[in-house]
Image (cartoon, rainbow over all chains, first blue to last red; front, side, top):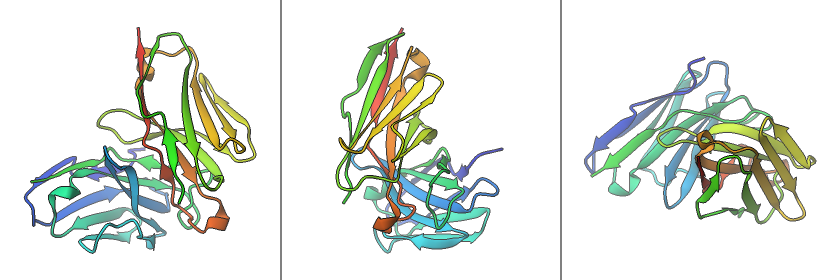
Length: 118
Length: 116
């Protein structure tokens, strides 16, 4: 089992540029989560999908953020245009759950994408 | 809204001692409470899950307790080792009545350092 795979591991971009983060969940998992981690705010849930359908995107900070899950093995988080305050580590996680609930199934995290916007 | 408080200061202990980390929450009692370990540059890794009707859960050198009256969970590592040094996060899974399915809420984490 390769685990949750995220790319790129590091991304440095200039303010105003578009950024796309990618995630491949664990095969067979039906829930996918995007989190953002900063020193100030810790881990924040941005959006989660269940069976490829977005269930709750209330954590997405602004319209500049968008996420898609075109199939069960791939998801993207896009920021357009990016701003310096978007600098953080973005984690993708997957699990087996009903409508995104973790219940007995914990989250499996990728190793994150460290985004720096200058 | 739910708030989670973990020891904000790093915990430094000597190898062989028991480390005890605290997770306090306000508002509703979660259906489940989970503990994760996070190493620098890596994603959190699941350790233990405890349900609201369970008082205690053990796994090897790890023990978690859950007191819904105190609104607190304690995480213990017995016979601690330098390899246990990491940040430990607690996370709450809201009960179904709060209609926040899937919103696993994380605490800020406590950094543990075990000295040889």
